[in-house]
Image (cartoon, rainbow, N blue to C red; front, side, top):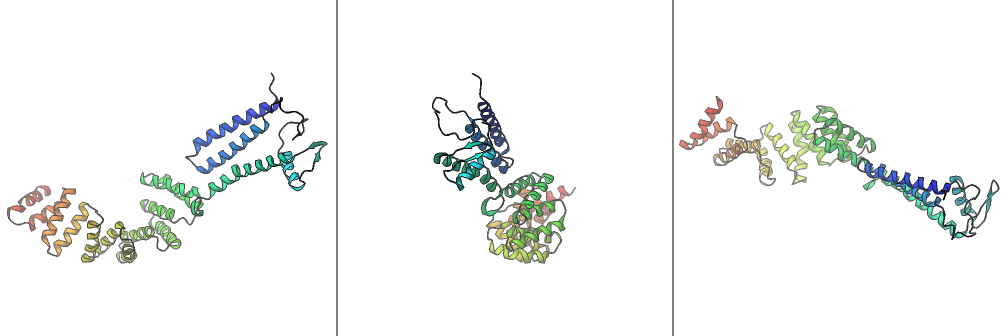
Length: 338
């Protein structure tokens, strides 16, 4: 039996709709906004396929004609004109170029449902794709996340592109401003980085990551007092922000405020559980200056357990550990100087 033109068009719409679904599956992880749009298009194409699918001729006996039988090609103008006409002139009929277009009450309900379906599948996904949680564009969050991943992998060029995309979508995205600023530091563009941190602080003056990053730049520029001024309230207000405490201690240490530095170093060491050769050596050095040699020795030895190549620690331990107990450190200092 020869296929009707409607049957052929229905199959075509189904094939195209399936193609859009496949494309949605492939592109969803790239950009969910594209996925939503493709889903809406596929849904509408499937609707067209079902709509144009020829009815069962055995059961279709002298029903009211929804469209002109002389021209069965799907017409958007007739379709939407029918909806409009039946909203304004419920139950009435009208003519178009001599062809009657008659809608019963049941059919009007179908058209209303189709209109709602169209709005939900086409317009709603687009709106959802533009605005994410808390009113922020969802693709700005996705761009920011991707930028952070590239940044961690040291793919600086790609990170730069995605940070810029996030900020293009949402210029007031404080997290993206700070992330972009940190990337600029890695690229030695420190003036531009400072501008990013200042912009983030205009949005949220108490944003701790922006304060930390700005203080880091001050520390790098040897503006230790400025760094201390920024970090002190951050450290007190955020008792588990140990990175800020460590930078605060380093700032005190750099200007020889050793006792102030020791307070924060101890908190990072004891409560934060931070361990490194450098941290242990700096705490040991302050105890050494205060002539608390037992504490200094323990921490010097711990520093060597993390890095056994530091000649100065061997030499100092050889000086403060008396008698033959210090022979090992003295001999190691001599060997490692050669």
